Length: 140
Image 1 (cartoon, rainbow, N blue to C red):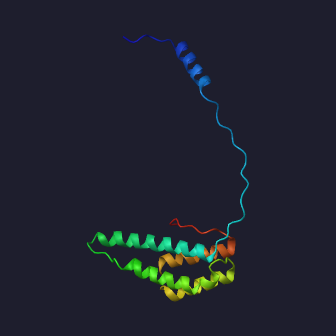
Image 2: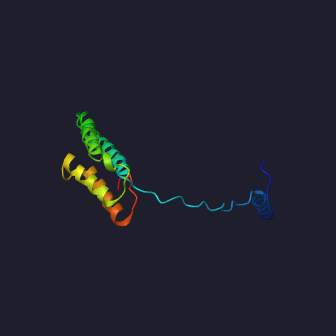
Image 3: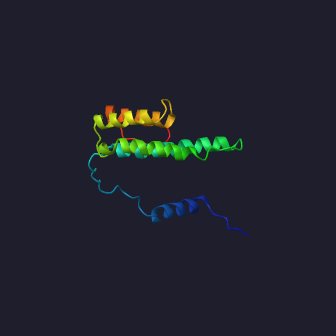
């Protein structure tokens, strides 16, 4: 049989439990920020790779619902991306507006005009040049 406990005894037990717990952690020392990150052409090519894979995955999932899938798509997309990388070989480590224009022109030559992964990367390039906003691989 359970022993009857008064409200006062419960309150005392709760207070003792609270007092026996470890004190809350305080904030540690501030870590100084490193040098400003630069989004180079190579960074945007990595973002393009991610966007192409995400696009292919979405399309493949959509097509497989109907029992068909284009297994050659990703290879063709990567072939075009390799051509873009070759076009931009001289400016891979640069982050200035002229280098970004070279990248955008190469993207326009290798991919169709309204291809969503490329459109997304071009928007991110424009945002980097205009506002200094670092690129993201997360779908927005």
